[in-house]
Length: 295
Image (cartoon, rainbow, N blue to C red; front, side, top):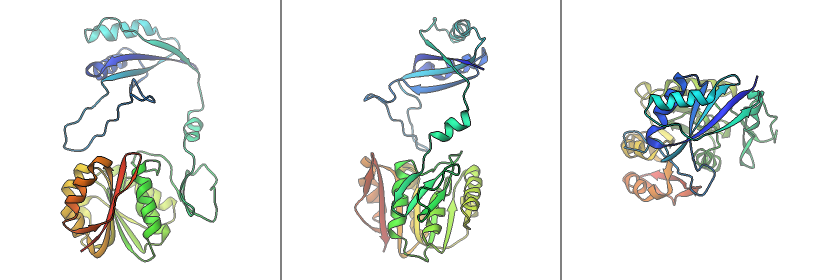
């Protein structure tokens, strides 16, 4: 079966209502994308909890999918009229049926973290059978190793775990950092996340990697301190969690913080210097990783 795909340039304020109207008039799916994605004018949007933020790109494109028999022109006209627009310009392309599972899988190759640490999707052969291989598939929870913040935290764990440490992964997402810590040599690892889906994904991934880690929502986390506390989240929660994360770190223990933009390094350093002696930040593609030792 073939499909028709319409690309409709829109302004930020009408992108969502127009997408909803298209769905109501017969579109199979819609997605809102940056009109300048992949160019020098691409507009990054970073959302953080409890902070006002721009939700969509100023210049967006609605990508709408229709079946091959649909009268796309009429659907777009009706949807536009529904929200008080005149007929918009758009481009229409044919989209042939594909093996979507295989196509999706082809976009995720093994990721090399270091000479001894790889992240390998389950459908790939391991690139280096002598290395530590984390078997992890893209899923609903954040953290597959492809994002610079996850990469930075994994590199830190690979460089600093000596063996036998206790590790807390605060904001565990997929559980990748807790799982990696165990495979590198930590004696035990605990993960925390506010999202129940993240807890499920983390447990599934731990089982897939043949390690035992404990994952909790914050209110369920048992008391105790850890040799290493890693938090790969975002700047706003890190601003609020400083005292909690410090309280979970043993004296002489280490903290690792990421999800920080390069321009936020000074602010985050000032907050966490209350409890930790911090090393210089490490950066990757505009993102930063801070680490330090608790006094």
